[in-house]
Image 1 (cartoon, rainbow, N blue to C red):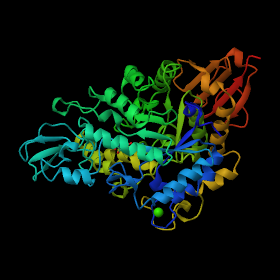
Image 2 (image 1 turned 90 degrees about the vertical axis):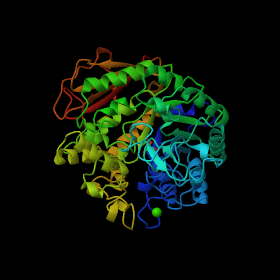
Image 3 (image 1 turned 30 degrees about the vertical axis):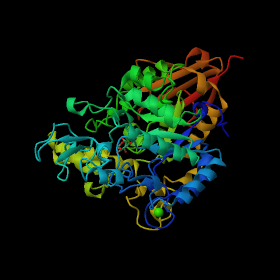
Image 4 (image 1 turned 45 degrees about the vertical axis):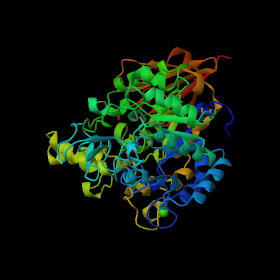
Length: 537
Ligand code: GLC
Ligand code: CA
């Protein structure tokens, strides 16, 4: 167990993201719940993780699956009760697992009491909790687009004003310029710390400061002052881990987030632009782009910041489908991607099901639930793609790919529910499921488990400086990590063909500590990975 009293415990941790709606249903309503998480803590303990980031579990009309909160201090009944939550926290703790909550501080649900009051009249005390502009019905204050399609402005006749909602109309943005709003949020965070929460993931945090009249919809001038105040007021104590959703901003910005006065780390997601956030680039990123990305962040944050590592989350399609192979190399490529990511410096966040090698699920568009699917499809047509092309791209890129139910066993619905699952289960659960993989020493699950154990055993995983190898290769992504603690080499064939690989001379007698083929000689076979290690003594 990690010593969580250590200030930087999270630097030694491996964390795991749970999307509660899709993890495990215990009352047959087809929706995952908190008792379903508590029930599977032994599974997570076996995997070897030190903390769970829970996607939002507070009361919500679920227009955006909980990223639209209507009451920050209660558990949504579909997930269970506050008692269920307290039980989860204490059961997790007894296994050395911390609970990390998702804080959605940029916006609330339009069903939050604050917003219901805010829209009643201009002199309501809550009116100024949100962002309003005068205007005339039908003539928008400006033409800023919302993340999930349509305009950011929405007319409320009672007050004769527009409110601002940067994501969807159901998610009005809070007015961070109002100190009363900030106070409410800090108090709310203290409430959850009081319940035993040991860390927070800060949703869409770059959006809290903006200048909407001048086209600035994120990264406004007060962002860093707000975050400094947030740290001071809401989590001044050491040991509360914080990670911001704040990529795409360059080194200076990431450094200012993580210089010790704001957050501990941020999710930097520019690499996921290839076929990720830019859903229209439906292609694998070139190996050179991946190498540049990892080299840049690994080298620049070494001893000067800290990386939050991830390949998947609830907003991204499955990595095996994106950068690996669904068939015939699902298993090899899932393991190779695990090695690529778990070999890096930083705190890894494993998204539920990655440890099984779960893949995307293609559905007819009307079977997807995510509110972004409709607007993405419309955008595709607008951009000039044919209907077939737009469907294919949305199928490959939409967020529900990551949200299909967790695959536990070979029972109906993969053992996720005895009811009707809220989103279809991927039919490949007959082969890809936790029960089968736990029993198979050669499974993706046991490879993750092995790598997590190695990270804890060998300090060079924490301290080694990153150097890319075979820099000109368009097919092999390889790197070494060196420190006084030892030397690591991680080689990954990113393709389905054999590729040459030159082992650096000083690794000639190194130990092969992990691999995804039974032997490790000569060229790298399809999606092969090898991890080698030696120490100077
Ligand atoms: C973040 C979340 C995403 C959500 C959005 C709005 O990007 O990860 O799931 O839809 O914020 O809250
Ligand atoms: Ca349920």
